[in-house]
Structure formats: structure tokens, C-alpha cells
Amino acid sequence: MDRVELGNSGIKVSRIGLGMWQAGGKNWGKDVNDRDCVAAMVRAQERGVNLIDTAEVYGEGHSEEVVGRAVRQIGRDNVVLATKVAGYHMRERDVERACRASLRRLGVKEIDLYQVHWPDPWDQVPFAEGFRALERLWKRGLVRAIGVSNFAVRDLEDARARLRAADIVANQVRYNLLQTEIEAEVLPYCRQERITVLAWSPLAQGVLADTYRVGRVPRDSIRKQNDLFSPKNLREAGKLLRALRKVAKAHRRNVAQVALNALSKDPIVVPIPGAKRPSQAEENAAAVSFDLTPAERRAIEAAAQSTRVETF
Image 1 (cartoon, rainbow, N blue to C red):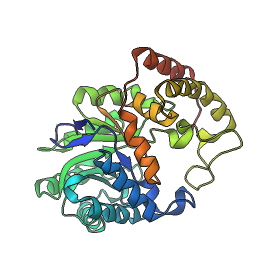
Image 2: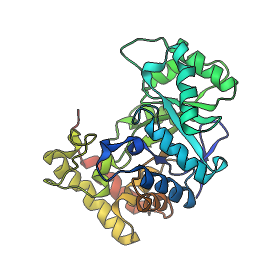
Image 3: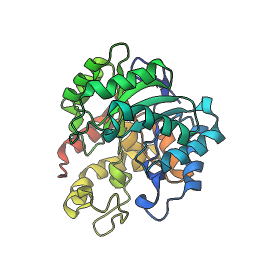
Image 4: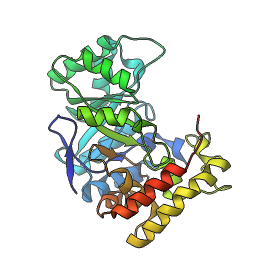
């Protein structure tokens, strides 16, 4: 699988990664278990995926522990590990504690990409405080690169201004063919500044996997409140799904693979879909192994632009 550089870090990651939020426990459904999640990570690596993303808040650290089990099987040198410090841990005294706790749960000595999970709007911790601590961890070699997640352009600029020697190499944001808000400001800025975009929810939590219909929606605690699964939005998404099905049939692929392939057209975008089982990880990895024609890309883009879901 082709690899791209995370920002200007020198770290090379696969064109598609693997998100492990679902390894945080039962919030993603009763069919999720640690054994299958570990097997999914192993299978993904066997298929060329080297980027695994997690966070300290996923299952209060449980996801990191599960990822750590997989890393021991895969081998540390074969994985680019990305995790996140919670926005409420961005006081200077808390950043190193959180980092060391993540290192312990992951069972490693160094985190490849350490990301700020969100800009905390409640405690109003000055960026200078938290990012000073992050840069100290970077200088000491506990983290190889610094990233952020869910940052708007104004937050990115503020964060970058607080770093003296290091820079932000990645911004992890929601991005899929139904939810394209980042295309207005965040994506152009990241492209200009050579900041990699890690796209979370690249399949719109399963809507773009062509799995759900009106009357057939997920019941897990994460997705049952998601407006994407309202009858109105599912009917609207049908416009895009029809275009994706046509392209999928032509390539003998599934709809999810076409949706991921179309999203990764921009070289700075790395989708990080989740996987509960090895079969899902294998399908995701194969999503960047074929090429869409210019006509197919135009058809998908036109369908995406005509599809208007409403989420709050």
C-alpha cells in the first residue's frame, strides 16, 4: 500500500488508517469484543495498514489497552501509533501525566502522533500552557509528532503560534461524502500548510457502508442519537448511495470501499475507518487498491453535492 508523510514529520503512514474507538467497550454494540478488535488490527497490518488511531477517552483507556495487545502481536516497528490527550487534560501539569498513562496502557516507550482531542471550551485553558507541555514531550522523545483533532482554522493558527520548534502535522476531523463542512476552510488551510487531515467517520458511522435503511438503524449508544439515521436523512442519503452502488458494481467492490476511495482522492486526506472484525479491516484496506475514472469521480461528486443531510 502506498504511504504518505504526516505533515512534515518524516513519519510515513498508509493511505488508509484504522480507527479504534469501537475498542473502547460495548458502546458500539453487543457484537464488539476485544478479541475481534485485536484480530482486526492484525489483519489490517497484514494488508498494508500501519496507522492505528485511539484515544485516552475511548472506554476510559480500554481502547488503548486493546491496541497495546495488538501492537505486541504485530510488532512495534510495524505500527504508527496515534492517540489523543483529552481536551480537559490540557493544563500543563496534566499533559505529561496523561501521556505517560497512555504510554503505559499502550505498552510502548514512544507515541508516534500525540493529538489534542478537542479544544476545550469550558475550562478555558490557554493554548500556550498545554502546547508548551506537548512540545516538551516532543523534545524529550516521548512523542514523535504533535497533532490536533476537531480544530477549526482559528484554533489551528493559535495552536501553531504556541509552538516554537515543533509544528502541528495533522488535524483529525469528521469528513465523509455526506458531511463535507471542512471543505470550506479547514481542508484548504491544511492543504496550504501541509497538515495531514485524518478523516474520522469517513463512512458516516455506517450510512455510507450501505448498511442501514429507514426502519433499520443501529441501536448502540453511540449512534442511536445520531441525526444521520433519521428517516429524512436516510432517504436523502439514498441519492448518493445510488451513485456509489453503480460505481461499486462496475469495479466489483462494495459501496463502503468506493466511498473511502473517493474520499482519499486528496493526497493530504487519510481516512481512518473503524473495524470491529478482521473482515471489515480487510475490506477497508482494499479500498485504496483500485482507481476510479474521472467520470466516476465526477458522478460521485455531483451526487454528493446534491445530497443535503441535516445534523445538529
